[in-house]
Length: 156
Length: 75
Image (tube, rainbow over all chains, first blue to last red; front, side, top):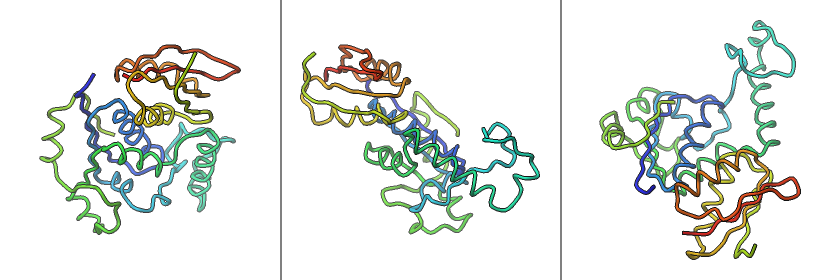
């Protein structure tokens, strides 16, 4: 039971895809596992100080439950993404689902190691000041060094 | 059943009941008992999996007044 390890690559920055790395990371840490999450491409959004821009789109998302059936042409309209995002966040709050900020704090508190992909940080011209404190920066070799020793390794 | 500390996870969804149960156990001594109350039906299976993997003993898992109640003995 002791000594298990998990590595996750978080590549997505949409609201729904932001949850799994943070849920699994915080839970594995609670089980006493050593956890590293490597954030690359759009996953870098999850490391930004301000997470309020993280959204969900009904566009090209046919499985998203909607209160009324919505033709694709309507999903394209301005404001639809903001509306879908605020509806989803309100529903999550009502159902007691943790916010991304809370899950992220729980991960950091439990010593989950967050690594930002240096290449994509440079690619998108992010500044280190855009990101929260307490994270590390590295590349593929950094990730694989730890990933090679893990029991669970996920690409999200 | 007697207990030393209580954590009310009512209204919280996965993974908060488990993650916060872990936090509640942190400042307890080995052998002390934590009572956890939850409303998330998923917590029944999750609490058993948590206990199995951490070595804390799940003394009792049941329901009371529409809520799930667990007694965990700290390892």
